[in-house]
Image (tube, rainbow, N blue to C red):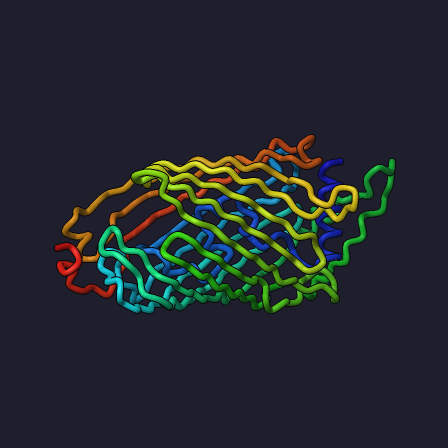
Length: 361
């Protein structure tokens, strides 16, 4: 019965919204550690090459529940190393990257691959030197461009019968047109405004081309819109609080909001909590909570020494994050929750080097 109801929910969502599922890895508790997957403006924003791969199992215990796997990477091009940046410098630089993911929900599947480019603008002067350097106001703009392939398992579709009717021989009517299956061109745009390495505000829009999908002649992919904001506060030496908020909106579907709090301890240990909810569409209860996410993580570094750091080189690091989503909606009676794991690699990037001794004297 749960499987049948899940498939009915999915089928109704396709008919009303015209989208295959949540836009790939955007439904992710690990937005706290990899916001690049929903905003292409973030590529090249760090002083390293950032590679991440993740897996998410949503609604564990329900047959056919959504699953997502992804691989992402980005790096700066022409960026001055933070420790070598003079406060009066107005360095602009580029970022390049990619995202690839595979998402499935019941009989439906989606595979997408995107290339990425961003441009970062330093708008005002920074302050301080070396470890104490703080950027001024910066603006980053970026885009994803790639292909999205949408398909389904026809054998599983023919197993979906009308629930609650004994001996019912008819199948649920899904408006599926095999001629519309295949790949569509897809793109995203994003912008991020930073201030003093402490505050940021971002907007992004995914599935901008609204390509035809293989679920009926009238259905197209709907754009997804995101608004993000966050901060990074140092409470004491090498211990940081990173609150953030993520708001999502798809035309024809209720809006949702996600509040996050991440704690970093000496860049070695991480913890986080996330509360997700949204507009239920009911006048009696206009807002409901969907899930509570709990995250832990760690980072292992191989340092290269202060001499190499002065030359603009970073350490190599491996990151590992795990989160568990506690369901708060009606699905709690059927699902044991959600699981997500992310593995990250931070590698040295090439920088526009300058004589750092002027900074370190």
